[in-house]
Image (tube, rainbow, N blue to C red):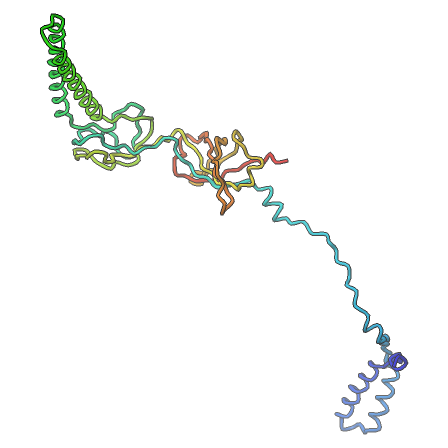
Length: 305
């Protein structure tokens, strides 16, 4: 079998001869003898194609796989992601509050409209307190009477003209009158709502001359000068991120860039998203253009070695 496979095969000559013979037969001017002569001549001149000999042992021998290089091409995307230290953040006010009514009364003064700025200590809402003031005067007079009664009973008790029980009763009535006056004073202190901090009015939930019920929301205020940043970062950043690290923050709405510093880290990591929330202090250098509710991109400079 090896001897037979070792013989050279003139594949190109045979193929060329067959094609040429077919073409000559298609012509009516050529005879079969002419076609045979030309085909033999071309087959003799055609190049010889040598087919290598393959033995049965070679076919049964297992194939050897070519060595595969274990070197990996550099992952440009991974390198870029590793160098990237950007995270999304939200601007938030340090001080904001919804002020509620501490009494049932009519609003007689509400000088600041929505969006207006105010200073700490300014009167934001004032109620009609004529009735509580009148009750205060009555309670003051009642307390004075009870105090005189106690003083008289103490003198009588000194001369044994009154029993100790009567003296104790008069003292208790005086204390009751004093407590009622203190309650009225506390109610009257709610007649005016003053600003607890400097800021601006976000929303007026009631308006001038409307009557407010107990604990009903009146207006919402916010401090626009003292701002914080809520930033969500990957939990892997905890390897190098710590309080006191500085970073920059670009606001989407204004396009301004501000400086910030990491103030504190929340004590828990989200197990699903593998992220953690950090709080940053924003030093607004954009002329008070940055306000709560704006968002942007925080850029950190990694100190990871």
